[in-house]
Amino acid sequence: MHYSGWDVAWAMAWLAVLLNGTWLGLFPPATPRFQARLVRLHTGLLWLPVTISLAGWVFAAPLTAWGPWRLDRLGWFMSLYISLLNLLIQTFSVRYLQGDRAYPRYFGGLTWLTAAAAATWMSGHLALLAVGWTAMGLALTALVSLKREWAPARAVARLCGKTFFASSTAVAVAVVWLAHVSGSWQVDRALAQVSTFAPGARYGICGLLLLAALLQAGGWPFQRWLLESAVTPTPVSAVMHAGLVNAGGLLLTRMSPLLDQSGVGPHLVLLLLAWLSVVLGTGVMLVQTDYKRQLVASTMAQMGLMLTQCALGAYDAAVVHLVLHGLFKATLFLRAGSVVPRPERASLGPAASLPSAADRRLHVGLLLACLLGAAYWLIAPAEPARALSGLFLGAGWVLTWRQLATVREGRWLGLGGMVFAVLVAEGLRMRLSALVQAALQTSHPTQPGWPVSPDPAAAHVLVGVSGGPAGFPGLVLAATAWLLYACGAGVFAWCLARPTSPCSIRLYLGLVHLGEPRPQALEAHPRYLANYAEEATLS
Image 1 (cartoon, helix red, strand yellow):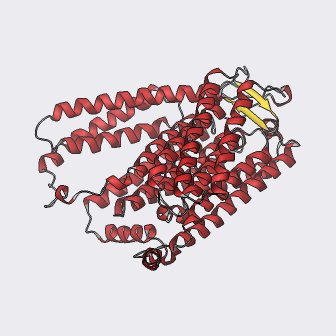
Image 2: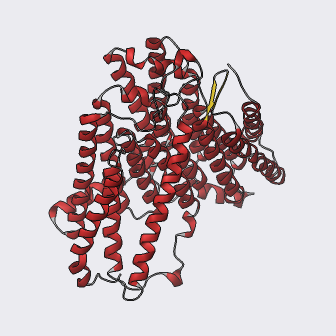
Image 3: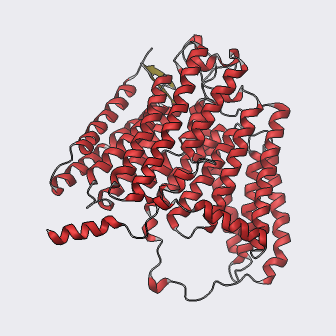
């Protein structure tokens, strides 16, 4: 065991933030002025983990161990992402939540949630990983239950508690089972023995990890808690959708050697469930009219895409996806109040119909989309999920082409702008993917792309960069993913082209029903507001 000064600085920074957050959560000041001062002091302290995480990612050794902690490039990268997200959301909350009865407690809960997430991905001990995973669920449940005077919030808090209890139980049983069959509680030592496990143990532990990831991500069939979480305050929704639901992808990335050596079965099961999550989440998003519920359904679909990348072995792409999606979705939630149009800006007439010329030119766009997607795949056909990315790129081209057909002036300028945006996005993806791969790699010569422990007894893989089943099973898995998503896109396109057909109507009603909350999680007008008004009148 060895450690560096950055490890100690990181622990001290989070300890200072946690102590102040705990004081705010358990012993909130009585006066609003004192509350505001402590909250601003707290948000200032949040710069400490951000600064230390950035410095550790840049200057610290590629891999250090300190007690139960294992600080590698991936851990530093995720700690930087989580601490920066925490800083932005809590700074936004200073004014947004001001006046709420539980004002200081929100900052304590947000701090504990993000600290638990950072500790989980810095853990080198299986027990610490399970404790961090459980603490994330407890912190989020506590945040949701702060509005306990509102009946829907209490109902959603109970559902979240049950879901996270099941997820934490699955992780706890998985890590105990893994430690038992491997003979070690150290993550790297345990994963180094995966090839010696009996098939039943590998499948059982993989099943528990997949269950935990799906529960945490709100994937089908466990999407109910996520779809009803729109009742939470906006900052809580932002940190939930940017920092907690994507934890399943990180869990599978950490445990990827176990998943990859368990054959094609777990990957296929994960792919099917992830695909269903994408299809249902996209459908609910299209039929919902409430903006926050649209964002929630979008998260369900995006987490399905992230889990699809894990199923195909593209773990670096999954990490890049969850980081970019987290930042993007947190921004959308924090600006949710600004999407309500002003009365003078509201549209007074029906939307413009698509000219018939657009339909006549659509076959040209389809041909170009096929060529573009095929060219993108042929650049690196061996890369996991490359064919699927080509399909998404082609679909995006078709949608853009269809919109450009409605533009009378500046059409070619718009087309050039789209091509430029695609090139910039691909360059950014490649750069971030290279950074994540560097975070995942060490210099072990026998297994390129898989980091290892400095301990010689555990000189095997820790996390995968590009894993998944190799050879023919891997090709079959990639082809299956391509066909599933192509068929899903085809069904949506057919229904959008024939909205009055019986099948489209049934699908629409089914998606509306799926996206609607339970009666106990819905209230036409919050009754507790009437209680507030009555208390104000009496006082």
